[in-house]
Length: 398
Image (cartoon, rainbow, N blue to C red; front, side, top):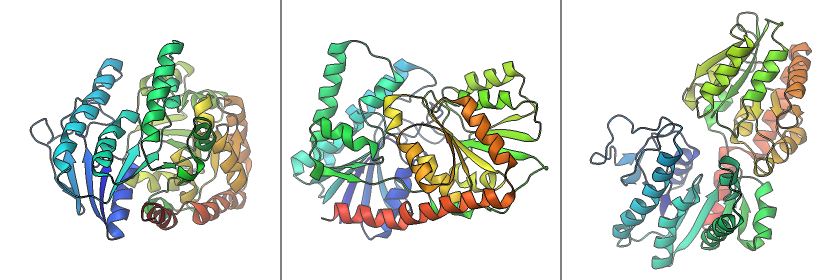
């Protein structure tokens, strides 16, 4: 089967769509990706790429069609808007010559923005082929969590646009069960919805669960994007409550729009001895850091859309077989409690997070390993790459 994948982000950018495409290729499908120029998360084009040099045309047997695109910039709302618009327009133009090629399915990996799906709609409607959108960020709710829009007329227009886009697809795959109720209330047919949680790449399972200590200190680690939604300041506030315990190290791996702000808060609290900012590292290096940690942290802001979201790092942490320390509400909290793999406080509850870190700190090694073991068992039953690839195959080959 020939599959056209539309995603604003693709290799060498580090997104789950890379592994999804590899998985589809492994299943024997011929995969072509329509994407933009790599610039995430740094906000500038990667070395070797320009408007005239589109870089590699293939990645592990996957064909790549790149369109020109304005980089997103760094902490610049105007540049980000131009980035979104330029991909929508240029990818829609780029799809025109693809109309002379025959694809059996069109698949969209939809993070922000939702407008990245428009080129796929053009192809699927003109060629009358089955279309699928894999929703990572539910719009416009995710957009409202980033930009506060109080104008009711504008919100109504955005809502109508997003509903129209979602309604244009034959099937909607949702990364969180929490999205289902929202989409159903918007008039989406239940028959069009499929729950397909994200998996974790196989290398996360290579974390050494027996490596319990580094420098005789107790290390808890957050790894991922550091934006407003991730509420990493909750971790810093919890660390401040534990600042007198020099044996507890709070490790922050990642980068993002809130990185400097979070770092400044840590400095204001005088946490240079106990909070370590590692910076951004490739996903493939995470097993090393996870192996050196006694607990892995996930936090989110207390907002409606985030309460129905299942952060992908939950699956990665479970695969690593380490206890999860969470300050999240809703769907993410439900999954962690259901698996019994960690200790959970509500979103933004830094005092609750602090208490749970101390509770984990006071556990013996076997108690901590048991939490990690339960998480890994839950992961193996629900979130493995093999299982979810089979689920995806069953959906798109119907």
